[in-house]
Image 1 (cartoon, helix red, strand yellow):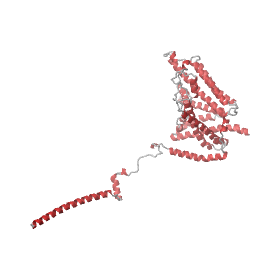
Image 2: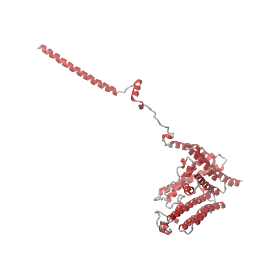
Image 3: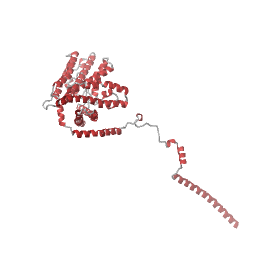
Image 4: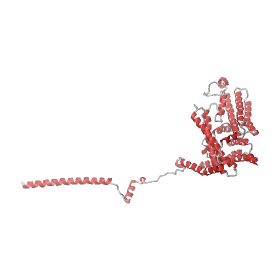
Length: 479
C-alpha cells in the first residue's frame, strides 16, 4: 500500500513536471514574440554599414535627388511665367529715371498747364480754321455719294464716274493742304488734326468707290440670269425699314449708310458691317474716362519733359528715351480706348484694331500689326490689286512703303509749313532695315532690333522736325 502510494506520488510528480516544462516553453515563446515586437517598434540606430546595406537593398531610385530637366530660362523648359522679371524691369526702369524726373522738376518746376493746350489748337479764339476745314469735308463726302448714286442707275458711265472720283479724291488731299499753307491763323496742331481727317476720308472714299464698283461688276455678271427687279432694286425701295437686315447693292447707297461708314473706326467699306446687339453704357463710360485721362497725361508728359528737351536741343537725345517710351505706351492705351469708344457708340462689331506688334521679330510684322485698319486697307485696295495686275510681290511691297512714306510726310511737312522729307526718308529706310533684321536676326534679337528702331529711330526723326521748326520760328524771332 505504501509502495503504491509512493508510485502514485512519483507519477503525479512526473506529470506535473512535464506539464510545467511545456508551460515554461510556451511562456518563453510568448515572451520572445513580445520582445521581437518591442524591438521592431523601437527606433533603430543603424550604423553606417547598416545604412549602406539598407540603401543597397532599397535601390538607387529611393535616394536620388537628380533627374533630367531643363533650366527655367531655357526655351525647351516650357516655362512661360516671367511676370516677376517683368515687374523687376519696370521697377528698375522707374527707379533709374527717378533722378531725371526730380532733376526736371527742380530745374523747370511744374510746366503742366491745361489752359495752354488750347493755344495749340487755336491762335485766335474767334477764328477756328481747322474745325471749319473739317466741316467743309462734307462736300467731298456728298460728292462721292452722289457719283455712286448716278453710277448705280446708269446715268453716267464707268469712265466718267472714275474720272469724277479721281478729281474728288485729289481735291481731298490738295484743297486742305493749300488752305493750311495759305492761312497764317491755323496752328500746326490744328493743321495736323484737319489733315488727318482728310487723309482718313481719302482712304475711306477710295474704299467706298472700289467696293461699289465691284458690286456693279458682280451685278453685270448676273444680269443675264436674273431679272432686273432682282439684280437692280430701286434706291427708293432700298430706303425702307431694313436697318438690320442683309443689304444688297444698290440698297446700300443711302445717307445713313454713308455716314455710318464715315464714323465707324475702319477704312474698308462693307455693305454689311458686323453689329453688336446693344450699346454697353458702362463700357462706353469707362472708355470715355480713359480717353480724357490718357489725353491729359500725354499732353502733360510732353509739356513737362519733351518741350524742355527740345528747347535745350543741344542735350543728348537719350534724355528723352524714358519719356518717349511712356508716351508710346500711353499712345497705345489711348488708341485702344478711343477706337473702342467709337466702335461701341456705333455698335461696330469688329474690334481688332491692333495685334501683338510688341512681339514683332521683323519690321514687316510690326507695320502689318500695329494698325490693323490701315493694314487692311493697304492689303485690300492697293497690294492685292497690284498683284492681280501682274506686279511682283517685292514691287508691290515697295509701293506700299512708298505710299505710307508719302502720307507720313504729308501729315508732317504741310502742317509745319517746311519740307525736310525726314519722315519720308525714315519710312523708306524701313526697307533696308527690314532686310537686315530678317536676314541676320531671329527671335528675341529681332524683337530687340524692332524696339530699338521704335525707341531711337522715330523719336530722332520727330526731334529733327521739331528742332528745325523751333529754330525757324523762335530763334529767328528772338534774334
